[in-house]
Image (cartoon, rainbow, N blue to C red):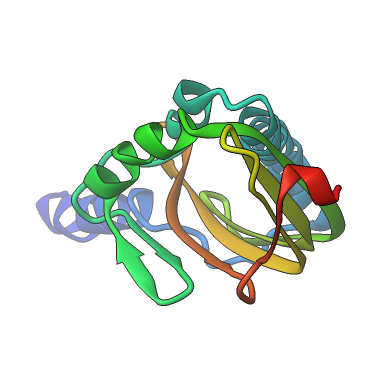
Length: 165
């Protein structure tokens, strides 16, 4: 009996903690995308409504967070400083042309977007680009989806003044 317990107990112990390597089904992926979709909506709505707090709550507050925009690497503490820039804006607008969700695992999704973007400063300058792209890695952190890594790129925006528009 002791020999049987000696063999069976480790098998049970080690098999219970193993993660399944089975690929996710399309149904499982669809459910995960439906969890992420409202966060992506929040991302764009908070940008366009200049709601900095709603925007910031999407990001992982960690020293390991990374955001790269046109070669500039920022951490969470740097994006906290974006609040001052947002105070200078009159609006931000995005026209999403392509959107893609890639479910990597049950707790990781890559969101990719390509579109057009424009922003207007309270001083009247309007910056716009017809080529704007981002990618964001959403991970479930302590049961909550967060952007843990982001990347944005665009050419130098065209600048026009309010009088020219």
